[in-house]
Image (cartoon, rainbow, N blue to C red; front, side):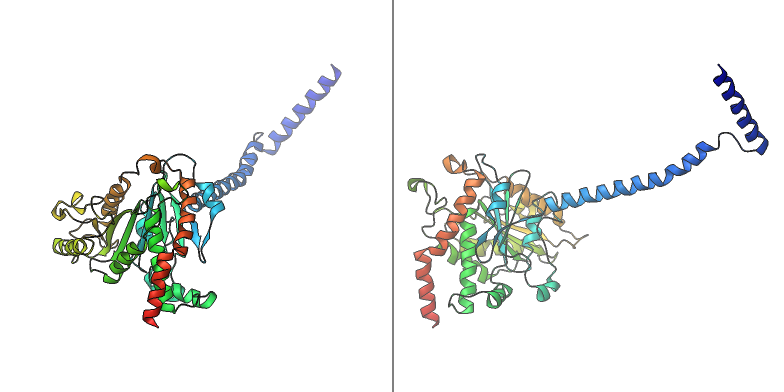
Length: 369
């Protein structure tokens, strides 16, 4: 009791002292409120930093993965971690010359086109060379495997080899032609669909002749070399779609479209390539209805306000038609993604060691000597 009485007068004394000095008794909570503000700022900075890290993680996880690098090195450990053992696979490849927009087109098959496959403005090409080296891979949420390839017949590809590697005794022109053919044959052997991209609607006869030659040299390259021999298809060819990119409003005409259709039908009349029944520009633009080859026009990205459909609308239609391609049936349609990859590596070896292709190479060397 004595302790309690001794404490009470002290409290009264402190209260009187505060009242006499004119200072409010509840001033301390205000000071505490001021001390919380720096903590709030720290939390805000930390939250912003966390959001930035999360965004960076999303962007990095949505970028492509190296599939194959020169000289003929496959990124097997990383690739197999991203592939599944579940039955079924679907592979879309793209080929074309430098600057035609291969990476841009293939990136629009994904949910994050700005960060999937690296692109390059044409004015940087002379200073930095080609952007895509070898083959890059990306897997969409729908489990479509996308393969972006280095440019065909590109002098910077040859320049890299002359500086750091060897042409194996071949003349530089011969080496570049054979590398181009090897790449086309490989894509024709492992893909379900191959997009062949051209810059505008003007026909590139050099590219068509390379495709025709690659089809011929693919002779006796099996689709799945690791399967039993009786299950192998020696004459497998994928669905082919010709994409004319960067068409201006003056080039995006039915006459241009029909003229190119006639050329393609004539050129591939006796071809085993599957050039029909996959895509149709008339499905999105009824005025371009034409029952012919798989030919699709894309407008320039920066061409807005013209009388043709925008690039995003046309690209969306192309993507939907390609993704609707029927999968392989039977045993081969059940090959898992990992088994597809293992067969792809073996196919690459078979192409490089093909006696038929080596005989062609010897003939070419004799004719040019």
